Image 1 (cartoon, rainbow, N blue to C red):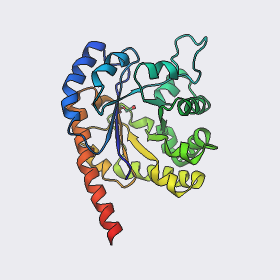
Image 2 (cartoon, rainbow, N blue to C red):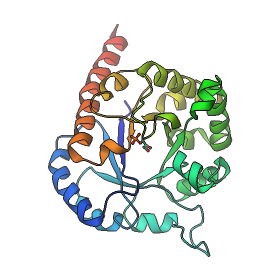
Image 3 (cartoon, helix red, strand yellow):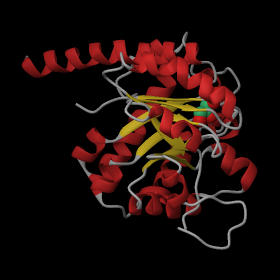
Amino acid sequence: MKKPIVIGNLKMNLTAELGREYIKGFLPFMEHVSESEIVLAPSYTVLPLLAPEIRGSQLQLAAQNMHWEDAGAYTGEISPVLIKEAGCQWVILGHSERRQYFGETYTHVRRKLESAFRHKIVPVVCLGETLAVRRAGRTFQIVEDQIDEVLKGLKPKQAAGTVLAYEPIWAIGTGKTASPWQANEVHHFIRNKIETLFGKPTAAEIRILYGGSVNPENCEALIQESEIDGFLVGGASQKEETFQKIISCVEENWKMKKSKKLRQRLK
Ligand code: 13P
């Protein structure tokens, strides 16, 4: 059975000094993690400092973005080669803050995704609608367009190895989480779309995360939903204790999900 994923997107928040402290408190906790893949995404400058500290643990590192080219005259950018050298096995692509503030489009995201495959970096592609789109009843249409632009034409194996993160923009940093039902409905839609594009096994294998004001209070109801395979956490990952609570919640509930699936199979 696939493993759930919990990613802490620390955005532009963690300094090197705080990062080292964070990790010190975090590594003993990681020894008890058995069900999930746990990934931290600090700033680029912090990545190479944390990489040696986490060596030998199950904790993994992600970059929050990258360019699609390996090298070249792209002032201010960072390449897949450089993030790998800094210790990353994962990369977050197309986060709504990149799209909103830096003009990133899904055409860019597609090029970055292909580059991530070339470099064997696990891509986490963000999808999601604005409040205006949701109010206009166009959520499914927008999410479908995003999937088409980023994933169409990939090989099923590449699609299965891509992690999707449904992050409704109106829920990011606002304290307004999507209700478990709202999130699951979109996740279900995304999985059906993946099935249409790539077939049933890929749809079953692909992991779809939820992101947007996830915290220790709301994570249990969300992870209990059938289509949610983990979380992309922003604000609540800045404190180790709250992030650990979310991870523990995913761990416990995943064990229950697994035994439920096993029981269903044995029936
Ligand atoms: P918050 O959890 O702070 O809403 O941020 C979510 C997010 O953007 C993760 O990528």
